[in-house]
Image (cartoon, rainbow, N blue to C red):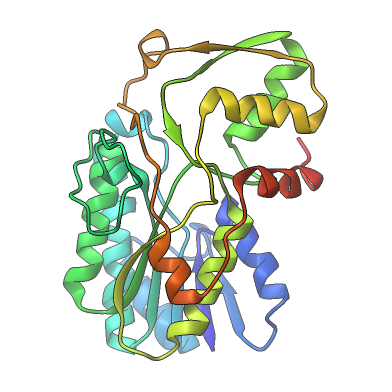
Length: 286
């Protein structure tokens, strides 16, 4: 199968490259903004035609949550227009599109894990553009799987884990929010799930939304404590409230995602977040 992966310089894109190394039976095409502008419909179409793309994994996104409040047009371009262009080419070439979305499509006021069919209600520009991106894909009628995730981290790029470790180098204590609940997700596990979806659906007609994170529930301050414990860092984590750490964009207070659907569809077990954190940190370099 000829598989296009966009956003290959990001956290998930790096992990998809590791997956590709284990699946040489496929022809992989890794791109980022310097090799394919996915906002350019003509460029996308030409790429699909040239390489006879049969599946596309869209790892590209505008993810600067706070900056999106000041750059709504750019966020819309990357999170809505680009997925639409990819979906349109997927439709023309009967290719399968796997698109990564976010817990931010919900309002974060829930008290049980969000299911795929629960009402959405984004409270930020980032969340709104990601939701509109989902809808733009579905409206094209292409074969697609939208996979919502949350609290993504990896051994590469900028993320919470690496930020905490860098802070610990120069501070003996830090303040971290304690009233936001969610589940850390290792990009390596998400990449594997995306590969499994391609293998499961292949050339079948599909138009589904899935949720994927690691298992378990925690808070940002507990997440930080786990990072320090695994790394052997002695840094005190002071629990503070969201009100004590104001941000331009509103964060979901509760963003735990129900993964029943993807576990049943793929007959897969998902690792606990602490187990995956340990695996990631074994390869992590700052």
